[in-house]
Amino acid sequence: MYNHILIATDGSELASRAVSHGVTLAKENKAPVTVVTVTDWWSALDMAHESRKGNRNPLAQYEAQAAAAAKKVLLQAGELAKSQGVQCELIHVPDQHAADGIVATAKKKACDLIVMASHGRRGVDRILLGSRAYEVLTQSKVPVLIVR
Image 1 (cartoon, rainbow, N blue to C red):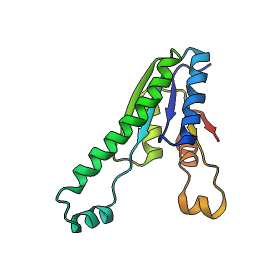
Image 2: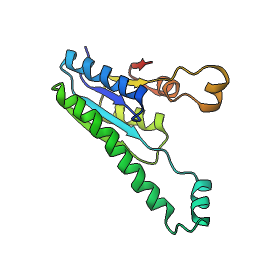
Image 3: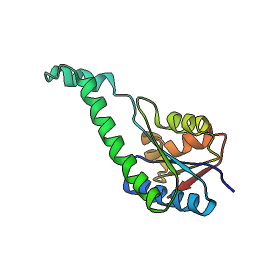
Image 4: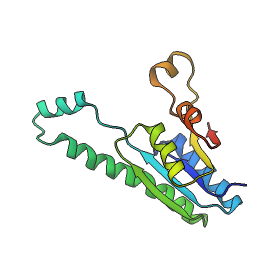
């Protein structure tokens, strides 16, 4: 049914359930997976705050920390895929809005399904915090499976 599945994760417990579900689905379909994690831009306000505290190169420090965190998240997902015998590619997309990075990666890798988690926020929480899952749903040209 699916030929290549993209699994999006941020390393949270909820996202880990989506990774597990996506890997299981890939195994059943004998499909490879691409696991992606996206790190947002660092705000200029945060950068300025760090500079005022004496950090001479806050951007480099942020990028190093983001890369290390992404590597940890991706390696966990990769180990799960490997343990299930699922072919897996791991991708970190830095400095991009999450939904944009997820959709662009799915397109670039010719994925025919995106699997990701959603907190299921409603009302004011959704307005204030946004919904990456909703953004992916509205931007994606391929089906999106949301795991709650």
